[in-house]
Length: 147
Image (cartoon, rainbow, N blue to C red):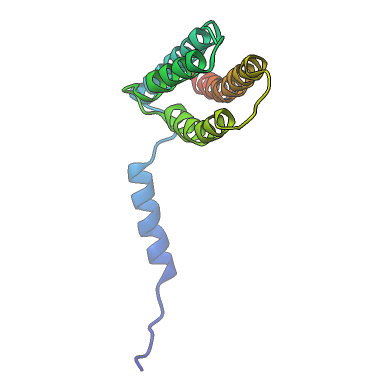
C-alpha cells in the first residue's frame, strides 16, 4: 500500500480562490438582464394562451379536448425553452393523463357539468403555476434593477 502525502491546503485554497475570482461576477450582464425581461414576455404569452382557452367553448367533450390540445401544443411548441416552459411541460404531461382518465370514466352522469368544472379547475391551477413563476421572476428583476 502506498503512503499518502500531506496536501498543502493553503496552496489549494489560493489557487481555487484565484480561479473563482477570475470567472465569477457580482452582477448580471446586460444580456442576462435582457433574458430576464424576455422571460417576463414569455409569461404574458402563456397567460394569453390560457385566456384563449378560458374563452373557448367547452360544451362537449370533443370541443374541450380540442381546445386543451391546442393550448398544450401552442404552449409547448414555443421556441424559448426557459424555466417556465420546462415547468409547464412537466405539469401538462402529468395532468394530461388525469384528464384522459376522467374522460374514460364509465357511466359518468352530467358530463357537461363535469367538463365545465374540469375546465375551470385546469385553468385555475395552470394560471396559479404561471402566476407563481411570474411573481418570483418580477421579484428577481426588481432586485437586479436596484443593484
